[in-house]
Image (cartoon, rainbow over all chains, first blue to last red; front, side, top):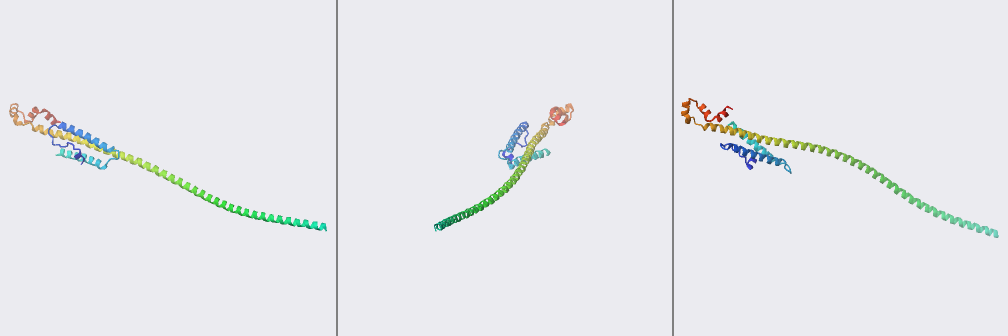
Length: 71
Length: 163
């Protein structure tokens, strides 16, 4: 999965430095968006599998966070 | 006698002349026949060439017509392909737009959810940090409930609770 290649600190077990973690996440999200844009603007042609992996990874991440919120 | 001899000579000369003329005429006739044959052969050749030329002309005309029709058909097909390509490109751009939007929006939602989660994770910790038994004297003196003590000790937490 893409997030395994570019891990995002989505470990929600943090109790201190919450603000720093959110900033870090924001930074990594920006990096992910840049990667996604690079893939979309690929000179040859975008790789469907890479795009799928990236999209799937963020959707899975969203589901995981939502699940944690419900708990 | 002389006159007869002379007359005979003249006749002989005339006869020879006539014979020469006949011979010439025969030669001329042969020559005319030969030339006539040659002319006929040439005419036949000319007719054959004319026929061939007509055939080539007809074939060329058909070929040009077919080529023109084929060219027009190809041009039409090319135009249709160009329109299809334009549509496919527009479709491709729309898909990229949707994917980009989906990706960015999902990340944005994750960020918001995480922010919410961090707030919700922090609140109980803050509440748990206050042990009412530590303030038992104050509770007794001021005659306050543990919730009211909570307000004094951690007004921020209390405000968050209200919100």
